[in-house]
Image 1 (spheres, rainbow, N blue to C red):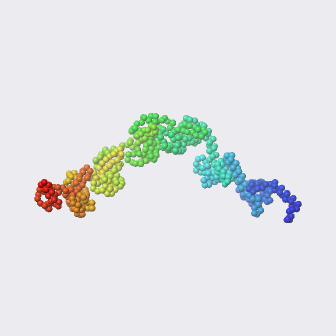
Image 2 (cartoon, helix red, strand yellow; image 1 turned 30 degrees about the vertical axis):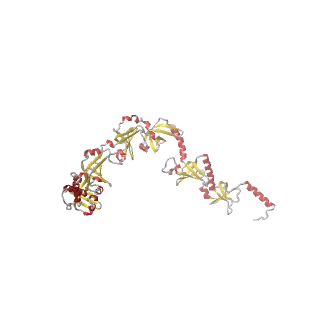
Image 3 (tube, helix red, strand yellow; image 1 turned 135 degrees about the vertical axis):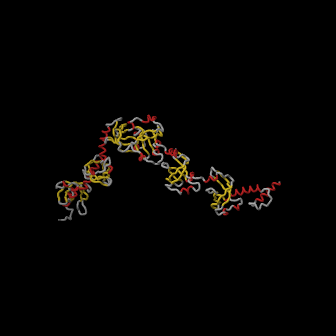
Amino acid sequence: MEIYKDLGNSASKEFEKMLNSQLSKIKIEEGKIIEGKINKITEKFVFIYVEGLKSEPVLDVNELNSLGLKDKVKIGETIPVLLEKIEDKNGEVIVSASKAQKIKGWDKLVEAFEKDEPINGRIQSKCKGGCIVEHIDTGSLMFLPGSQISDKPLKDITPLIGEVQKFKLIKLDKIRGNACVSRREIISSFKKEDKAKIISKYKVGDIIKNAEVKGFSSFGCFFNVNGELDVLVHLQELSYSRVDHPEQVLEIGQKSDLKVISVDKDKLQVGCSIKQLSPDPFEHIDNYKLNEIYKAKITKITDFGAFCELEPGLVTLLHSSELSWLKKNVSAKKMFKLRQEIDVMIQEIDKDKRRVAVSYRLTQENPYETFSKKFPVGSISEGEVVGKNEYALFVKIEELEIETFLHCNDLTYLNNGEQELEKYNKGDKIKVKILEIKSSEQKIRVGHKQTQVDPFDFFNDKKKNQTITVKVMSVDNKGLVVRPQGCEMDFQIKKSAIAINAADSRPSRWTGGEKLDCAIQELDINKRKVILSIKLLEELEKEEALKKFGTTEGTGKSLPFSSLAEDLKKKEENNKD
């Protein structure tokens, strides 16, 4: 090859002029899609010719095959490619057929999105959150969210994979080059046209037979009509009686006749009613009387009770509190079955709120009245301890299911009630006396100590200021604890009531076990109150001695009281005056 160093001669200038004129005809830019003609094919590569390039770009055969261009790999065929670099560091031209196809596909997607036209695609595979869809025309990959696959839940989408279907572009990210499509929008658009035809068949006043409950909402219930239309029955149109939620009167899958009350062709909605199929039962509610017993059919069972139908359309509430006299938190599900007929008593009729309340327990015999007949107040019977808390026992008498209440204060006359309570356990037998029966409040009070002899009866023949003999049981700084002879109860003599003289008011004068006399200072049989006093006995004896020895000469030293002589002396002086 001959190298020309002199570029200023006429031949060089002519060649430069010819080269510039040739390049000006063909505009080649990096990043643009260009057409290349295949002029050579080898086992691994395809060589293409692009006018204006100084060398032939090379494409991988496998790349063309993966793009579905296998049929085009022939000499003379043209292939669109993306010109990435006119010359790399090795002096070669870099082109890409896959990137060219992707860019062309993206342009088609943008055009379809702007024109709001559906595109053909094929679900390739599942992925997290949805599926991958391939654009049939360009091979571009798009994302199909799980919520956009269908207008109803699908358990298995396997039959949809690989099938060519129409999709709607719902989102394009031009910066990231991502596309999001929807199959649900296509299905809904077809259904919208079909739904308009279906709705045109209905008019106000039509009766729909055997519509099936499809779902609930806070404002009503949705019914499916012949598998072609969903209609709404508003909460207020479910029943003439008050309904807070559709599940109170209906169940999923239940069938019912409906009456068409509205048709909206613009919104493609049909409104229906159940209650308007029957006359308003409250028009003759006066036929029902309070506290009377009627037959009712169980229509629905809930956690808080059951709904009963007195007649078609007239549904009443049977609250769980009205199921049983004895059991609390009783379950209607364990007592009744759907469509079972039971007796109920009407407790309340509210015409303004269109509400009727009934009771089942009032139709049964009140066990508290039965108890009062068999065990009237004052009767004594044996019972079994079935429960216990920190201040009372619960006792069941004989075979009756009623649990009576026994307070710890009614356990014993002698000891502290709470201490006595600790002696009893569940299953123990105990004799009780019926103290009080309140049938309206479902309460029965019994006592155990009332079945025993009252040790306080010891004082029935006693009176105030009477002298009794007691035994010292214990001694403390506050005084003496004593027990009268012939009585089982203990009483306290306070320190201030031990002696007249303060020096003699020491409780330590006794050690326990001694017997002494004292006087009854206060006695109230009704209040079961007794106050004993040694000091009072001394005062009474002193007064008696003054009366007895008031005229006798002497110093009084031999008398039992040290101050008695002085008292007698003062009495004599007063008599002289």
